[in-house]
Image: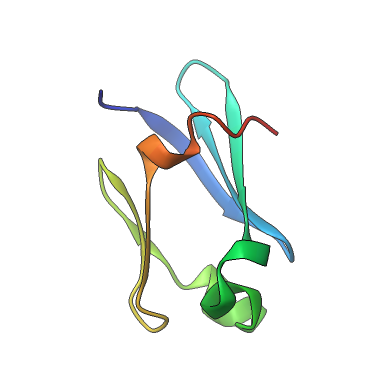
Length: 72
């Protein structure tokens, strides 16, 4: 299933996505040591495509499908 994302943002505790339908989902950094211990600048330095988010410097990837059961 392809998820169409209209917005992505990070804060001190999570990365969130908003779908084109307006739903918001979050993934919390507490379960991901590389993101949990990263600086705010490192967390903000991500790239994305139609399947997910990549933090190259941190060698971390999140699939948009992984967000689907994690509404904020």
